[in-house]
Structure formats: structure tokens, C-alpha cells
Image (tube, rainbow, N blue to C red; front, side):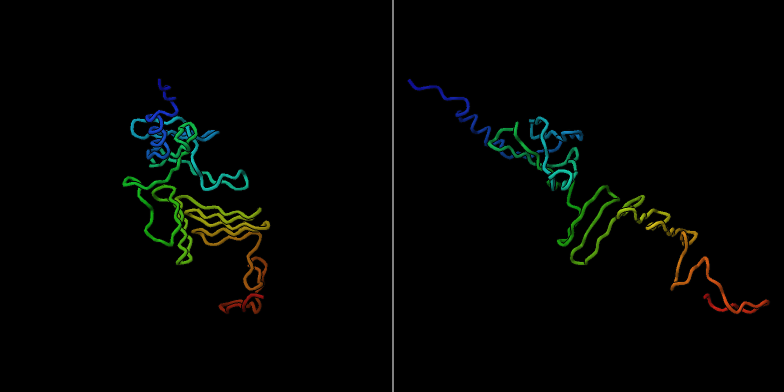
Length: 198
């Protein structure tokens, strides 16, 4: 008499595991809290909560946070076909979510339909587009670009450029001449012009 085939050796089980090694699907749910996980719909299957891959996951000194979006096309990779140990590979372009550029020299990130960043290596150009503003910080110094003004701040001094003009604090120097404290020579009464600032 032949021994019965163990479940793990069954042709049906082997076929199921092979089918599960790599599955195409779409992100159905995303959990942003710790630990971050998502669920994927692949045909009739809805996976359990699974981790997704990131550009870098090396802890506080080297990591990237870019969670997948519900409806995003993805792949589920399950080593040995075991979906309990699967990982989600998001970021598969589709007709509903095509690529953002056709430039082979571009690295592009789109945060919304109107905001994003593109580096064109061929042109040597970085373009960042935001609706409200951008702040760049180095230590205590910063540059803030808003819709209606630009603020530069460093070492206790600042410069604000807006519709009113440019306002500097504590002073503005041009060619070594103080805007606040310079004097003019050759001052006379009447219609005569003064000499240049000293």
C-alpha cells in the first residue's frame, strides 16, 4: 500500500505556492502607524497586513518614508510561496497611474498634481514646485520662499523681499557702504544734488 501524500508535498499545494511566489495586485489598505503595513488585493485574494519595500530602511541615519497609495499597482513577493512572509513591491506604473516624465535624464517625484521635484541631469537643473512655500535650513540659517515673499536669515541678520521691496535687518551694505548709516557729502540748500554716499 502506498503512503498518503503529505499536504506540503501535494501537487495542489506545490502549485499554490508557485503561484504565490510573485503576484500582481493593487494596494487595498494602508496602515501608516508602527509597524507600517498594507494589504493587497490580487484577484479574489486579499492579503494580510504586509510590509512594503522602501528605497532605504537603515534606521534614523538612512531611511526613506514613502508609503504606497490605495489603488497603486504593485507586486507581492512571497519567498517559497508563503504569503505570511510576503513583502509588497509598490510602484508599478499602470494606465490609471502612468509615469510622470518621458525624459530619460530626469529623476522626478510628484507629491500631487501641482507639486513635485525634478532633477534633469542632462540640463544640470533642479526644479522644485510647491503651492505654498519651501524652507531650506542649514543650522540656524534658513531661506524661506513663499508665494508673496522671500526671507533670508543667518547670523542674526535677515532680508525680506516682497511687494514693498527689500527690507534688511540690522542693516544693508552695498559696496561696503551702510544703507542706514551712510552720509552724503556736498550737501547744499536749494535744487543742487548731493554727492554720492561715503
